[in-house]
Length: 378
Image 1 (cartoon, rainbow, N blue to C red):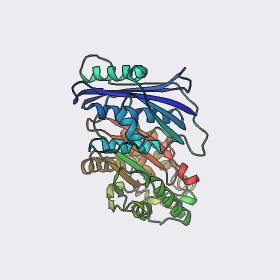
Image 2 (image 1 turned 60 degrees about the vertical axis):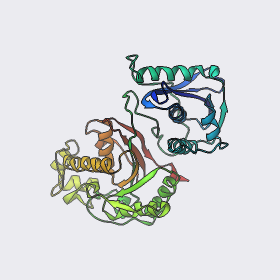
Image 3 (image 1 turned 135 degrees about the horizontal axis):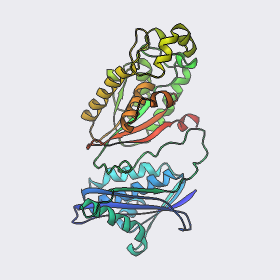
């Protein structure tokens, strides 16, 4: 699927109240597939223009595009992204890298400079965003309008879009702390779908291969600032595969440990139900109920929330790979989505899968990706 992305950004004052706009169009420009606009607070023209490009590329990925023709009236962004001009300004370097990381997700991306008059749609959206940044209107600072598009066929679940400047409809701004939530690879207990909590099995041969594939996938990014893992061996091994690829150490955070399943450790779902039918039945619908000699999901949520606060405090505004277990990942996604506990029972996360949650300085949050596994099937 090929699309056109037109993007723009501006600042009234340079720096001043800034915003961007982006639109995704069908190849013949007859159909608007997606729009983005966002007020950025105080920023420069060039920052806003880059943010517009990043939002446009993200929107293109949202609608399933594989080829993108980028059209912008910013000569600087077009030439830098095309590789003809060097990126020198320190504010532009991370934005250029973020855009380049998105580009790698497409089969082809081209860049074309166009006069401002031919970029009127994106320019209008950018001006609306700048109005919002300057407090001149009451509309939401962020706007999303999309036509549902069938995802490209793939063996893995279709991911939620990974990156944009802020979570839709909240107007959250500022640099988020981006958590790349990686579940560990296969262990002997996961082969038979047995409860695996505080027990400490190592990865199987397949699990090690999964960890290696996930590491190769994540190593393509250039924004990872830290790797943090659960203390359990299966998480440490999975994190170690990435550490060896990108040369970062693995930090351990005890609060990321999996649930203590107590008497159910090593049992199958059926066996646990047969051994403790009443407790097991209640546990399936009540997060305050603990397995015999184990801990409840409510208790786990408290320590996972503590882990989130520690991660945000230690790595504010950075991208962190968090290698942990299915329950902590579900709980971090629950915290980001601000939803009820049913997510714990309804959300499926594969072994060695990747999910992404972002937490913003103003308290906003966004889930960018859930259960990505395509890199395991290559």
